[in-house]
Image (cartoon, rainbow, N blue to C red; front, side, top):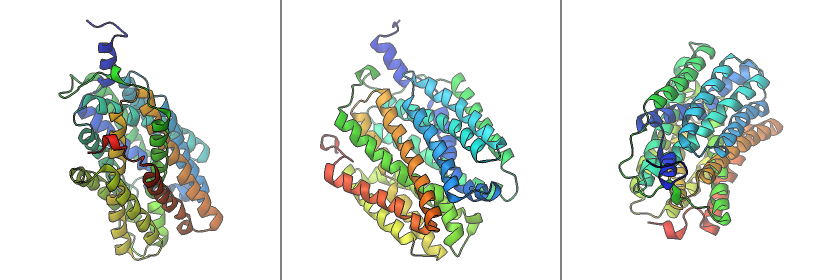
Length: 390
């Protein structure tokens, strides 16, 4: 029997936790929780009489919480997964009962803290359990995250016209608590292709840590700018408002989900850096195209193409990170920085929109982020270090 502090016990801490079924279920709920403010934003702005800048503060509160949840991921990762479920359930349950900016932002901060713990701990657990097929395993579990994001828009379109927010949000909070309990009662019994123990984790060089942190900081802002404001943008500027304005966000997340499966096949014949640079370049062009049209079908097409172009970035970048064997705290920090970008830049969009009087003008923020990521990838090669290319 291994003793605490031995390599065997550290290895167990690195891969222990709920079984893959409960990890996937938790990630599906996490996808819902991460993007839910986008579909809810028009209703919140109306019901609580908020400006776009104040709406951006709600997004910021949730993602600052997510940042702190990620940087505080525990060494015993199962506590991060299960504790995150409890924080998310409590935060979103309280949000259902709130009725204004201050109380709502506070509750979203708590819920976001739970999401940050779940996202960081789950990605690290999966990355360590499946050492021989890391990219495939991460793409698979993140598929469920994307599936939750897709379902969010569909659920919002079905629920918002019929029910008040309180009941559905309380149900959502309860599902987090039930999933956490299920994961506690059904832990993993091991992983088939786990290789080296978690004790092999080494501290990343400062330069590598900074590269990955900046990449995910900017990407977190880019993705959340689009998902957080796209429903509101569609309602204001599109001539077609299917599903109560939710159709654009549903199409974007559907394309992101499908794109992660397609990118897995594309990476068999293309370097990670090449695919990411193509995706980022196309994304910048598509965001610019979005602001030039009011035609619903064309806007829908742009949303599909944008989702496909953004899809490869996260799983390939995080897989490359895990191949460098970072410690749990380093990997959690890098993921958490993504949440910090997701807090800052959507708020910045709301600020620019309020000051300029146009959400269309504020689209310059995500377009600049896509261009900055592309430039960073080309100049430094940070998106795919050469020694890890296929």
